Amino acid sequence: MEVNIGVQNVAREIALETDASADEVAQAIDAALVDGGVLRLTDSKGRQVLVPGRALGWVQVGESEKSRVGFGQIRPDHNE
Image 1 (cartoon, rainbow, N blue to C red):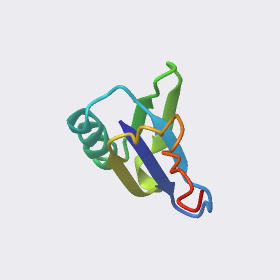
Image 2 (cartoon, one colour):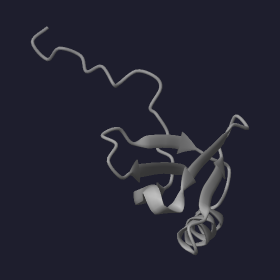
Image 3 (cartoon, rainbow, N blue to C red):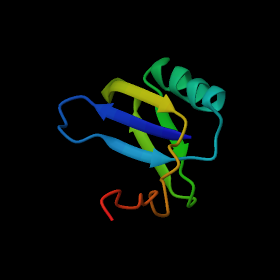
Image 4 (cartoon, rainbow, N blue to C red):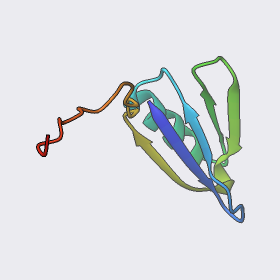
């Protein structure tokens, strides 16, 4: 699951890849927004990202895009 986090007053977003489901990420976000909590997510490599709930600007949660690997189709030249 790909998660992008916008932090208030910071120009650069935090982007991470996590093995958590969209529901698990949503629950973590909801918990961070209650009573000044902390958004705590673990990325795919086991590193933890902590963002104070008060500092959250926005969070985008979506499926990871699989990168294309390989070669495109080569068409023969019709002029030959």
